[in-house]
Image: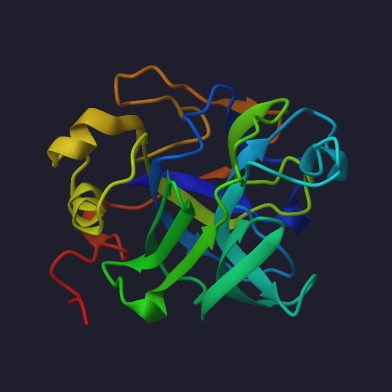
Length: 259
């Protein structure tokens, strides 16, 4: 097994991130990934769907004519207290707010999923941060109003590892791997099955948009066959994390039960 070992913000000169310049639609979507967080002061980025126009400052975030943000979300640790706290809670970042539930445990693997969708009443976001646990204590949920997320950013991108509006300041500290992206909102049951084997459900097989279960600094390409290949931004790269599959500590199949 392999993955991307990010050094955190203190270990980066400019930025350390990869992005999809032509991302899937912001709604609906489902994201699955393995995360091993290590403690650092301040913010982390697992991923953001949002604007990445190259201005590389707060203007990239507050891109609308009225000077606010729209059409973005992310799911990762949030510092407690902000902005430089070294304890963190799991959060959904959306609507220029941070919605949290559940303390981050460092130096252990978490199987995580974010699913998002829209209907006539609003935009829904559900972050499951320690699968297969899906109870109230292991998820963050937020419903945005229906007028949220309807405007296309100037340069829409799906960005992993660092925030495009704060490059070098919100770098993931730890390992990211097992990335699966779907262009529909999967059910919780489908997410659990897809997390064990990509494409194992009919809905997952039809909607799998990107797949790289063992990304490396040299290979973040799309293994799904759909051709949605991301690119690195700048010259900095994470280190390679590797471990025999048989001893992978995050393998939960058969080890935990849903409460």
